[in-house]
Length: 247
Image 1: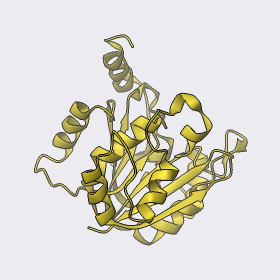
Image 2: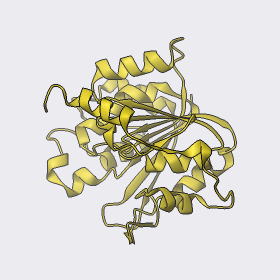
Image 3: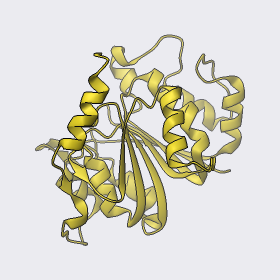
Image 4: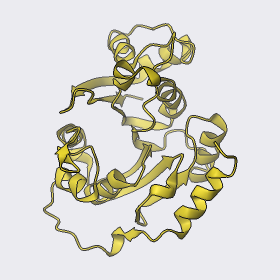
């Protein structure tokens, strides 16, 4: 990657004309799936006139009861901001933090959406981000964390290792498309457990061999996990998991 690429992307983002969601009049009766479709998120049942991942019903199942509460939501991998736009309308009092390595694609803006152009898998970048939004170093900051990033197994594991500690009690850590490394070899990494294996071990309160997730880290996570619910979406590679943190 060209050294100046991150800076060029940030310049493009700041200069780019965006859709102001705060000035947009919208039908309050729109469902979450209709919002996903409206803003162009592949989480919907349909996307670009094709079948989407169909994750809407799972988001509703877990979050409909809290959608009116004041929430801090972290989205790892935002691309054009489609799902962030939909979530800004669905979660009525949410602050949404979007992390993406390339924010030049971002199409939306809102007082509720905070965009950061950085690689969340790099510890230095992640530290910078958390220190900026949470200067008081409150460990439990996010109510919901959604990993919809690169889908590379290594990146999923590193983000989970770093950001899980920032999740509040009763918060949810969501990983979308977690079986992509099972389907696509370029997303896999040797000697690391795939996410389906990891969550199966966690459900059984067992530790799996990993170079990225230490035994101590896994023990800590296992002791803090409430429920793990994984689902199959509409496409062959559509899988999503909701990990609820107890304390």
